[in-house]
Length: 97
Length: 389
Image 1: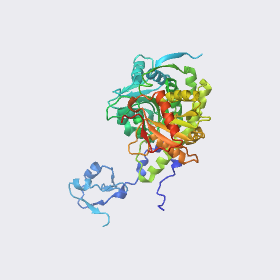
Image 2: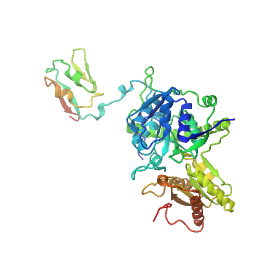
Image 3: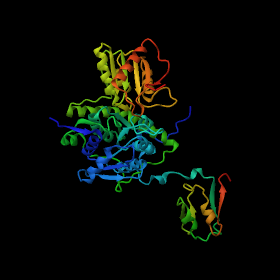
Image 4: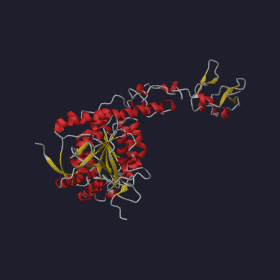
């Protein structure tokens, strides 16, 4: 028998599967189907913020030192940041490595 | 006394919709259509009905506009037929899946090919599994009453309701009709108040993705809601009976008390079948008619009770289910019987396709054919009645 794979009982769903809590998509982990993850080389990084601007999932946030750091909870590994980094400071690394 | 009007049924339906004080009407009137949305456009244009009339660019958009409007808590209406319904098809499932109380007058007609504008049930049967509640009217008065009931039921169940009206045979025929007194109707159908709706002050998400971990639960909840609508429908009909004395049941019968054979049918042809019963009863034949008023959710218990102790049933379908084991109603009936110990013989005829007349004389012949099956088993699971060989 396959195990129960449901998230929630059907009895607890709002009618029409409406989501009553605004902004709860923040809780949804989109980083778990990533094949490659971006790895930043801080020595090459000039903190220009191209990765921050171009990331389609708004994963990048600036840290205290001014570096833009990718939040891997959301990052789907598309590689747009790496492809557009003017200093080639971001490399895409296979998740298994 | 309530005043009777001679009205074209389409016009009467439009007036009943206007009486229900709809907020939004969205329609794409293209052939084949009816005077329903035309007349509503007139009422809005003349200032007789305070509603938003959205003339859209396709039937797909007509249902989409109803979905959008209903999601904000508006009372909505649209009407279509045949190809128009098929163009709406994708959005029909969205309306029910998102639990939106949309009411549609579905004027039943054949679908192409071959091109046809005439009446049968091939359009509605294509949306059999779309999660809508379906009523079938037999005459103009029922068409009007079922519009009132549709809003009452849709808004209590949060499910869309289709009122099925036979194209031309009903839609374009002048019939005597009475309307419910506006004050009574306002009590029967209070203004729509929906708990969850699109409102900038209280944001919610509707129409979200149903990942594999939740889609099954969403469908189970929707299926249970459709099943649970049965009781709400019964209550709506009881309340209406108290107001008007007009009684509606999920399955209605005619001369079934001692019937040996019966015809099972939906829609306006039931009246011809009942006329045939009168002819045969005068000759002492024990025949009756079982008329399915509520098609979805299918009222299995009522159906099994209605057929009494008949020995053979003739299910008269108005649509072909190509490659299936019968017509859509025939399949449903056989499935319902399998859940009970009753095993009458079932003769399944498909008749009246694309407006071909099935007269009371034809129904007399159909009854005679049904009597033959008392002694001789039908040789095919279904047959197309009256086809020229």
